[in-house]
Length: 183
Ligand code: FES
Image (cartoon, rainbow, N blue to C red; front, side):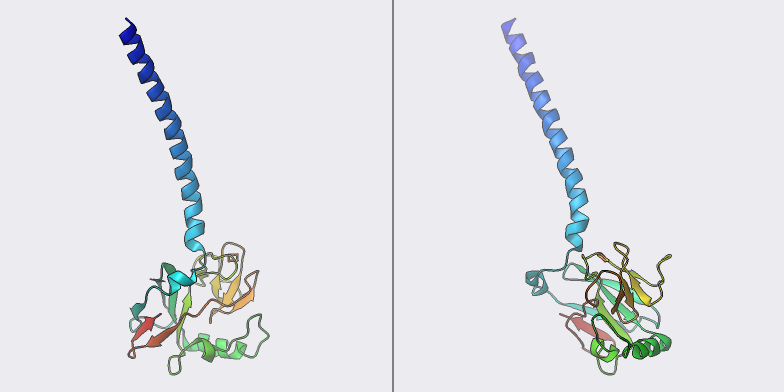
């Protein structure tokens, strides 16, 4: 009957619409899954930077160890340098650098062994890997960015590759001998 035909047609249209929407939805999710890592790795905006602080207990970090924390939705590296790394970093203070900064300028007085940097490559914002990770040790011993091959030394200073600046040292202070407050 007419009523039955109409019902079937309406149902068919609805089904086609649904398939169409589902296809679009899948494309949207696909695009988002591609875009999200890029967006999440972009450098923090000033608005975000103004929004929060983080306290980290650095007392348990042993020489040569580092931890990854999150500060204002961005990766933050906190590392305790070994005496050898400190000596190497100080020796390199005098070496020609792209973004010159002595170790003392990148650490706090009395805490030159604690290095706090954003884990955000200053080239296009990827997350660099620590020297100990995989095949990326590099000749400078510090951090290696897998995206385009920037190398940072043990003090997070850019030594090679396309990144223009050192890993950013955020504002922070020692609240006690073992706790830092970032932000
Ligand atoms: Fe790190 Fe390009 S984003 S080298």
